[in-house]
Length: 254
Length: 295
Image 1: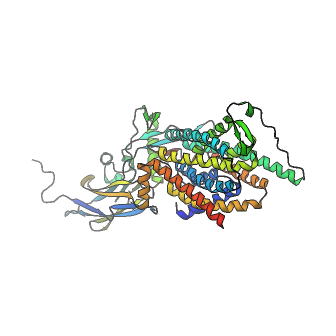
Image 2: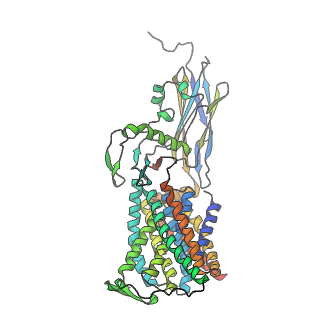
Image 3: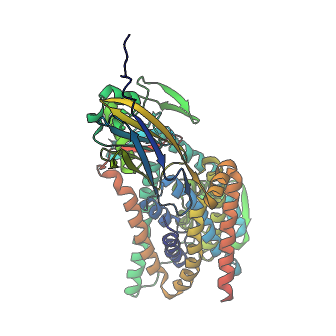
């Protein structure tokens, strides 16, 4: 009979908490920084690495490449990518490649290179959003270029980030990481996964939730615009006409 | 984007719009795009802002009896049809990922051509005045095709008895532009009313503003309902500054000669058209463009 873990050494475990679990986006929202604290419990004090992965709600996206047609640069037909998170951050105590093998990282979706962003490999054309002939994929050889472009553009807008020194041990067994949410962070439920790696294997995992939601007048307007778009349009025009009329009356009296 | 900047921007564009008697959309939409607001939102919210500044203008023109409501109504009927078509075209372009291209190209072509024509016309009239020559007489002969068409209607304020086909066609065209470019369309409407419909100069600006209110209001409702791209906070901040600036600008305009104002406006129009369009010819730094999955 094989015993995988010797009984005299209890398995290592990780625990963590976020300083904020609810981010309120108001009209003055300029991004937020959330701190994650955690602890590693390991009586044997084996060398440990911590990886923190934060994901925002999934949102399909479209990518187009600019091509030169008759002297001007125009967008190619967009290709739909599915499964891309609206926000993604990977932070670790050292570069991911040194913590675990390619296969392990790929299985966990850890690191921007291992994100499961997929454009269907086979070309198919379908009707989407009421528009016929949307090319779902016809990438073939260029697939990696396109995939890298998604990550690069998301990184530029601060929505994807990878920091291989983002998790630091502040005391024995106690670590901290920072999550920077940009102004454009999508609304929805986020998850923070905390992995403890020893010997290239994830030995303990914790999951924490985080919600980003619109608040105050922004929330009311957002709901109004999406639930009752026609009334919203009429109201916005009414405001415009009233303001124009008011200004003209105010200036006439002067 | 912070509120004071947007109000100041609204006021600056409003001043220009009051000074020249234009809606100012052609200026505001590009500025918003340069500031990083997505073109689809800029175009839709700007229609709302133009409706406000035009309302403020049209009330003072009405007091001077400088609005031909019947002609404005006929133009607006065409404009309503044009808005429907334009919003659908815009939606389709957005889903194909080509909305930005068409917005840039429309700016380059329309503003480029109109700016160049206006500039050469105003320059030659400034030179003629400097040389002490009499201003060129406007040809009062109206083109015969205007009278050959059916469905004639009387427009007493404009002293016209013409077919409704040309004004309706013009309205449709301006309605489409309004939806695609986020402009009122005054820069197309005013010259067309003067040179094609041959309306008296006194009623042209007021009537064009009247038709613009109707068209942009409709565009605004349609963009909100169909595309959900109207940002009411953005539009409101802009129009607070805009309506005030427009009133100040309208007062300042009496200090300048008409042809000098036109030459200046022509230069602004040209500059905006070139700035919007020339980017299409340069190799982009980033060859890929990311778009939301649902357009």
